[in-house]
Length: 265
Image 1 (tube, rainbow, N blue to C red):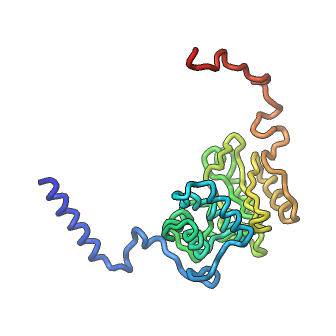
Image 2 (image 1 turned 90 degrees about the vertical axis):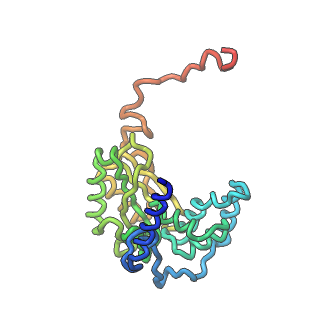
Image 3 (image 1 turned 135 degrees about the horizontal axis):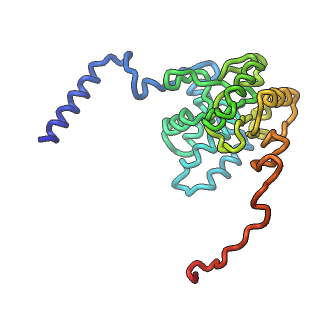
């Protein structure tokens, strides 16, 4: 009896959805679609460079032959490096062909992770996706960094560059975005700089930790001059993630366990 009522209710729901005009639907795939633009056309030929084709082979070699689809993220990352910091749909299609999956499986990954940047022709969840500059600056916005002043860091970058979040400077050099948890909360606040200025061959992705509003502006100007600021903590009193002034505990080598043969203990 309950099964019959549930089936009847499901039919009623399906019938209600069918009566909604297609143009007014606001769920499922209606929220995510691609619009061709001059530089992002579905049928536009795209392939990896000869050097990157060798990298593709090396990446795929890390996975069993029947699990090539597991390489989707590193291959998309390589494609984005080659294409100057964003992913055209034709590059996603090329990756799908290499790993032998339906293109939608690659689109799902590329539009889910914030590390991937489809260009402005993409509409993702009713919002335009971002374009990036040669130096894409990402500010950590998770709680530890926010408590330590990440909003002031972002304000300093946006004010200095004269852009809003997810905009590119007029010279095409810089863009600013937000990223969730960079995994170094003890060094909060922090930013990441994705450097696409030299293509995939010279691509770098560096963390700058313990930053201040003044220091992030200095980092921007150093990048503008073509310099490579020292990555890691920007606090001269710290070594990596250690405390200011050096360690006060755990100063010697740890003692070995009394018995390493756990079966004999």
